[in-house]
Image (cartoon, rainbow, N blue to C red; front, side, top):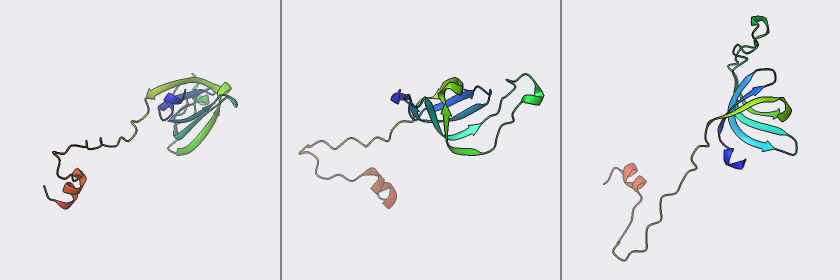
Length: 111
């Protein structure tokens, strides 16, 4: 399951409230799912009774741990963000006299 860490997740609780956040961890020992940077979208009409509906929240929650048994549905909305990659190392080529990183040229204004 670690390949899904960092994915954007949509989770619906047994209370029919939908949460969207970034998957931080899944703990199979404790049966929990942890999301970070979480928004609550409320029940979005799932209750079927306007008096029981829960409105969405404007708050952004830093971290929420959900009990696995209270998760009704969990979907991956977007895969994990690409990890920052380093540019390839310059080959050891005797034809190369010198190398300057591109960012140096962009910052200094020289080409």
